[in-house]
Length: 210
Image (tube, rainbow, N blue to C red):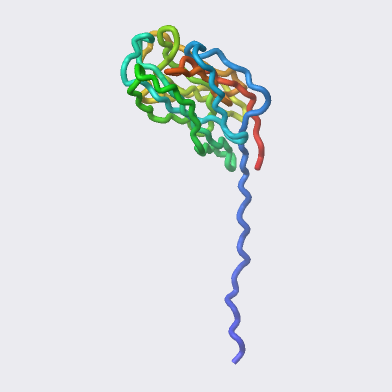
């Protein structure tokens, strides 16, 4: 008998190439005005890896009102890094590591509770933070200010994302925020027993096709 012929199968179609564009900061940073007041000890800025951007944050907050500041206050900062991308033209944000600046362990500020983590939506980048200024310094009631990316450019179209669990005072609204087309590329802070101030470090945003 003749050898059996193998099944005729069409050649497999090659996988279509994915068009992947990633956004990152570039150039020198410009420091925005502070949320809170720069007092106490300046800490090293929270910076994500070179091909990532800050995309969200959480905060440690005192459970009780701190009398010297007239409200519950933020003590420590936790910034979530991430990859901000376009995949075949569709926005995608992928969270990666979290980096932190911790306050000194001061008994008069204890206990503290870590808030929920808030993230900017896909298609946006972090532009700044709003909050409520305490007496003298410090802050609470934090929201992310996320700016839409349109054609790879940071715009002034903002989405506010509240950071749940950071207090609710509204008597002295305050902000640290970049001016488009720059976006927040790092977060500087002054921290002792609590976070006296945070300052957005603002960078130009560029893109790389991978």
